[in-house]
Amino acid sequence: MLPACSGSLIARSVLFKSTSPHIFPIIQFVRLFSQNATPKDAAAVVVGAGPAGIAVVGNLLGQIKGDGKIIWVDEQFQGGRINRFYREVPGNTAVKLLVDYAEALKPFQHILNTSNRPNAITALENLPQDGTCSLSYAGDMLNLLTAGLKQHPRIHTVQAKAQSAHLDPKTKSWTLATTTTHPPSVTAPLVVYCTGAFPTTTPLPPSSPPTIPLDTALTPSILSTTIPRGEPFTISVIGGSHSAILVLMNLYTLASTTHPLLRIKWFTRHPTLRYAVQKDGYIQYDNTGLKGRAAEFARTQLDGDVLLTSEAGKFITRIDCSGGKEKEWALFDKELKDCGGVIQAVGYTPAPIPEVRIGDGTEVVKLGKDARTGAFFAEGQERKRIGLFGAGIAFPEEVCTPEGEREYAVGMWKFMNFLKRVVPGWVEESRI
Ligand SMILES: Cc1cc2nc3c(=O)[nH]c(=O)nc-3n(C[C@H](O)[C@H](O)[C@H](O)COP(=O)(O)OP(=O)(O)OC[C@H]3O[C@@H](n4cnc5c(N)ncnc54)[C@H](O)[C@@H]3O)c2cc1C
Image 1 (tube, rainbow, N blue to C red):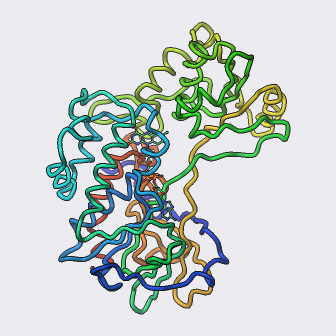
Image 2: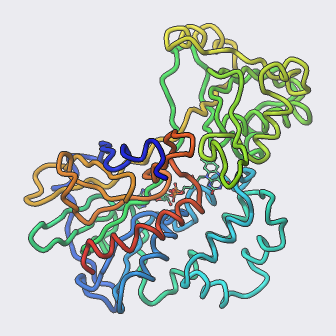
Image 3: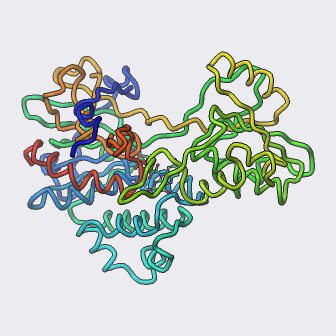
């Protein structure tokens, strides 16, 4: 049976900002000639080497026939934000799903079978499969797959930032320019953006203390040296989602051990929290509810009245920000003044995408996206496919829960599941 909200998923039009509307004329367009490939040899370009980009490259290898080359662009090739920033974060998905991700595709299986053991996948296999684990395990697994894919004869990596993509509608070929002139650009009929997302920040009253970046607050080894010890220090945390709870957990650990004079003000619009719940055959609030250690900490230390008597409640004071933006701003203005720092855990914003031009290239095109297939289209032309697609946390699949609620499917295994379903269609549409 179709879920109640399925009809609305077909073409959710979203507008995306490009990196810079003025940069195009000064980018030098030189076509990419890798050692053994001419530009026409590139069957696809993938931008981004996080969990989504890795999964896209693996799926394309299986779907593009013959010896079609894949150009893979990233500035780091370090497993995306999971490996770069979240190695000290407790994971929120079952270990088994990380193993499933790593074993989902033939090219991945080949990498695992030909890697020396013990390795990142054997480390995951040795953990209890139904439990969760530190994201350092996931980071190591992503590094292993990245290293293997980089060796693949059909994959050519470009370590650079992708700046713009230009479609020639006559040849149906994209030219992608990057920050490197060695090589600077590539042409292909299919381009995929897996460009990720970064922590959102919102304006705060002028009297607010300095912001401590969310990435720092999610890394206890750095957080502990950022916050002074041995003197009274109050820090504010804004937000009530998974990341906010992880930050509160890290701060509570410091306050109850090395930083006994640390106090925490917690600004939240929701005094009671939402949890992922295992139901018969599915997980309710799978994408919006708390999971893993964050859920456990929230239940036992923070939620509702629990905070009034819990150990964490000795250090954390909750400030109810419900009731609208004006009330919230007034509370920030009053309560942030005497704090030494503020951490915003208020969501994640898609990274700016490489700007997109079509045809004569005079104007940057505004894009919409079909959240069911991952296909971008020029705004107002949703039936016309252009060979540009998106995946990952920036462009997740929109799913409908059995309760009829719409959610974004964010998580490594969810990206993989989505891509296994849609990538054959991407390749077919692009006629590779
Ligand atoms: C705190 C937190 C915990 C999470 N925990 C889990 C978990 O336990 N399990 C799970 O499955 N998921 C988890 N996720 C969700 C998700 O898996 C991660 O957010 C993941 O990092 C998203 O992968 P991505 O590839 O979409 O983006 P990213 O990891 O952000 O990667 C994007 C990549 O694109 C590159 N890039 C961006 N723009 C350009 C450009 N113009 N040119 C070239 N390269 C570019 C970047 O360098 C980066 O390498 C978590 C998310 C957060 C925020």
